[in-house]
Image (cartoon, rainbow, N blue to C red):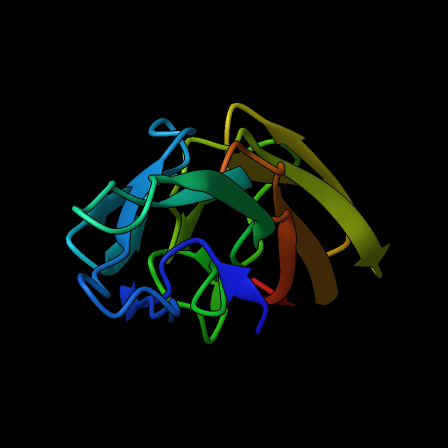
Length: 171
């Protein structure tokens, strides 16, 4: 079946008609993507994993030609990725202060893989801007700003997005 980065290790099996020695040895030819220890395969990163199966010669049989099988280790999802405002994924409520004085620190949780995080205002009843992970409410003392946080795709993880709402109360 399909394999994804972070999947549990799995075991290989193979059969042979050699009655002297029916042991098949496995190895990875792509150890940067997957490794083999005995019959157990462990995914190291997303990419193409190639496993080689071989059998040595016996008194009655010549060595079998190696057989390679490849499969793709897909990138994993960041199911726990969440945008935060004021430290909460539930959002934040702030009281409006004069233009430029009302700020909320943005953040994320559930990140992995080193993807770059960016923020954008996607819906706003107020004039909101974002700089260096801080949301600034420029005007309107009553309303909301909706912010989308995005983590970029990385070597082992797909990109992910989430939104958080900052509610602005009148002063």
